[in-house]
Structure formats: structure tokens, C-alpha cells
Length: 356
Ligand code: PMP
Image (cartoon, rainbow, N blue to C red; front, side):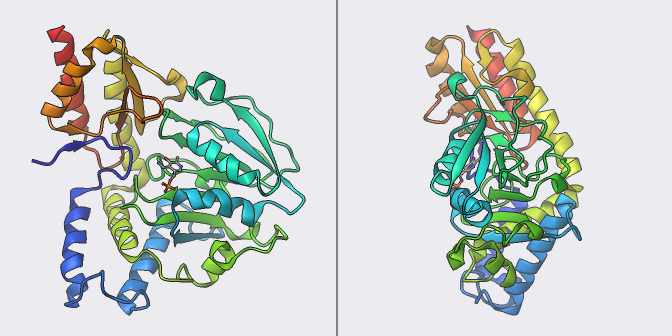
């Protein structure tokens, strides 16, 4: 029986994506060839790339608004340096919001390119909330934030209004909730949460912000070169892009982001209600900043850990342990995780309470 997979990423994808991907490995588009052995320049794969790029903009409501979608390699971590390469002016500065491990990794890279101003940080409180009321310098080349902090279970519920370009790492909550995506000038996300398998990175960029840094940009790191080459500057990660297209099609058929948002809210409400009600557990993130994707929580008394761990594992739950840097538990409830899996976890938490 399939496990109830709470892994933080790579993570659960829709079952139909697994099945269609498996079929394409054996015989892609009835071509009698595997998707793994065809040229990325073949007609069939160019069609995959074109549809995937168009569907990203359609789902985000960004069609015809001057944006380009790219499928690159190197993970979200490569974007930590591609962003300053492409956007930070040679004598300029950039503003960053420090909300967790990934944000601070992005900051580390930016510091090599120029003055990097940390406009707000929750580091001293172990990143248990999103800093509020920060000011973004008007002369910054861009402002960078992380919409969802995968490790700490916090999520930005609002974004600042500013005249400087807004860059957002949406690796762990892209396509999960409705936002006015046109408020962002550059969005990036590793595929391996809500979009597909690891190996592809999505970049959505407003073209007008490019070409202004005054830097020499190595070709592979230059967004303009990737746009010109229609996301095929070199061999792209063919299979992760195909599986991402299947996930995007699944999402569209479900009713798009607005439809999945309702399901995601129902899942998060169900779990957080139990964390708050059950005297054995406590949440770690500030209530107003709680993530609907990654719920982080602890046992009030660690003494119950062995029995709880045995119970959820026996119930067929996988991937519930917290990130190695924080411990405790983390329930990642990405788009493809069904409500029934959350109900099962809640039932196990209730059973633990009854037992003790
Ligand atoms: N940003 C966030 C918010 C993440 O959750 C992760 C990975 N979990 C990364 C960046 C790094 O992504 P990658 O492994 O694709 O480089």
C-alpha cells in the first residue's frame, strides 16, 4: 500500500503523474521511444517545453504581462547567485529578508556581489516568525524574500509594496495559494515540491528588469540568454520538465491554484486544530505566520517520542521527522497530499492522547 508521504521535498506528486511518467519512460507519445532517449530538440519535446512554459504563466495569471517562464537546472540554490548576477548593479546594493536557512543561504551568495542589506531577520528567535514593519531602501537593485520557510514552518501572508523589483524564492509554496503574482518581478522555485521531481528549477521573470546590472554574466547564468534560447540554451532536464508538465496539467484540470488553495487550507486547518487542541503537542511557528505547506510541531514531553514515532510509522506515514537542524516533527502538506492523509495523522495524534 502507498505510504502517506509527508516528506519535505522531493515529495508526493499526484498518482496520475507517477503513472503517466512511468508510461513515458517506456513509450513516449506512442513514438516507440522512451522520453529518456529522445533529443531535447525533437518536435515532441519542444512541444512539452512550450506547453509547460505557457501553462506556468497561465496558472499564475501572468500571460501577456511581460513575463517569461524558464526551466533551468542547478536547483533553487543556483538562483541564489543568478539573481544578484543578473539584477544587482555593479555599484549597487540589494535588500534581503532573513526568514530562515534558505534565505540566509541566498544572502551569503549576494554578499559576494555588493552591499547586501538585511532589512529584517528572525534569526535570534530561531526563525519562528516573519519579521514585520521593515523598510526597503529606495535605491536597492531589488528586494529578495522567501515566501515559505520549509524548515521552520513559517509563511509570508503579505508582501511589501515597494518601487524596487521584488524577487521571491517560492520553492516550497509555488502553485499552492492565490496571490497577485504580478507584484513579483522574479519568482523562482526548485521543482521538487509542488511541481515535479528534483532536477528542474522554475524561473518566472519580468523581462523589463533584465539587462541593467552592468555586469559580465557567464552565459549559463544569464536569464536573457535562456529567454532568447526559449529555455533550451543547453540540454535542459528533459524528464523533470515532462513530469512537471504533467503536474501542471493535473493542477489545471483540478481548477487551478484557487481550487487547490481551498484543499490546502482545509488540510492545514485540520492539522493545526489538532496541534492546538491536543495537550501532548505544541506548534513552533507564530500562529499568524504558520505555513499551510509545512506544519512544524513538537511533543511537549519528549518521553512520548518513541511511542508516537512507532504509531505513525505503523499507520503507514512516512517523512514526518523535523529537519535535522530543528528536530521535532514537520508535516509537509504539499498540493498532492490528500486530505485523508492529514486525517490519518490527526487520528494517530488522538490515539496517542488516549493511550497516555
Ligand atoms: N529554497 C527553499 C525555500 C527550499 O525549501 C529549498 C530546498 N528545500 C531551497 C531553496 C533549495 O533548493 P534546491 O535544493 O533546489 O537548491
